[in-house]
Image 1: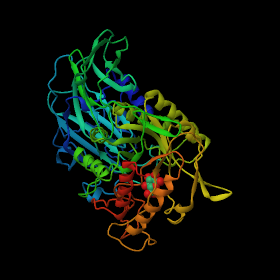
Image 2: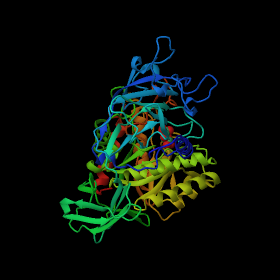
Image 3: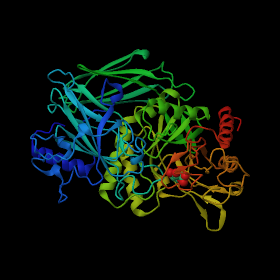
Image 4: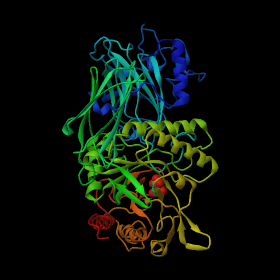
Length: 614
Ligand code: GCB
């Protein structure tokens, strides 16, 4: 988006703030391009009073025609010896990007507020017509972004990518990119005030510059459309196109090379057969190289081909019944005292643990994880559930909250809809049934299907007990009508009675759809031993797993589970000293990767499921 005039800039700003989208111009699939990474040490100023943003009457500096030097985004220096400028990025501390701030400095551990980040860089080499974008993998939660003192826009939502076009705004050297990053929780945000995970602030995923031709591939998607005749459907969206441009899509290993002319909107649709293609599956995560090009622009990607669907209560991968041997994962890696996953190596370690457990499926909770995670899942052969942080008590009546949720859903789906690993988009987690919530989630479901009708929709729902029989658990929710996979979380033996209760509960789930148990679990401190009835002992957690798994096997239409959770994770809600110490202890691994006894129970169950002996 090139912003030519102040007026347009003001309008764009308004749109950004209200609409939550950073930029209508598209540049997706950045992993398939050469990018210039701006990662490393950035200068940072911690600004709890937002002194660099508001004047002393609490009026924002960035609404002024000529912001004063005191506005931090001007990245100013005194021009005269007597000039008062009360900050200096060059003398300020540094923070690592990508990275959360909480685990980089003990003083920032609990911090929720604004931090200014600044990075300087030279303009990349480009030809006359080339366009330049700055792309952010994720910033939690709100980012106000400025380049050379001018506002590029605002983005809200802590786990999805966004970008701005900066063509014509760069100086040859010494460009100043400034972000005000604010992770204050808000009742009307998504997620809302209350969550059971750490609210890591910062620029948590990579920042890159992308140089592309005037007309470039903004987005593309590709998926196996029909199993029987191995028909593949793909579409490419050019940005800056007038129509008529040639677009080529090739899968060289399959001998496919197709060229189509773009329509007036820059879109080119492809449909072809790939009779020799091997299908992607956890047992054989075959990926094929895909080259997409138009004019001088080219993307190089790798994709898997598979189908996912349901028939009655059966889940079908590539047309055959499949059982999801899953585990839930938070995007956190605290082995070395860190917090939010910082790089692909940490993401890989989490997924390798899941593989060691015998999983073929991971639930990436409770927000979109990094693109690395999903791409590694493609490579390692793990099916993925991906979700947005519509968690617990969202402000259901608030239209801007809805738009925020939908923007996050759209960004998640558009980023990952060519990933074979992703089989489920999930809309919500444990949300209380009400007419307003049902309307909100119905709209989200419609939006999700319009963006991608090749995957399953789900949501983690809840159960209740039948009034006339407390041993009969029922899953009934208007949301179940909207989704393809009926999923629910249940904590029998932890929040709900003792583990023995699992031995007698029966289930009533009145939908002709597959059933997935998206959470169960119990807390245990690694190394704490005791009898099976002693809470927090490894034996308690082990006993709960031993009793829960057979109970789940008794559910009609049960197609898999993702117990809570792979690794202990930080949560401000977990305050029991000596046991929790601000960690949710339901991990099968401690935060440093040590196995608890329940790990082996689940591993054994999954071995038997994999062999089909269960
Ligand atoms: C849940 C939530 C999850 C929590 C978990 C727990 O139902 O979905 O985010 O962390 O329970 O441990 O209470």
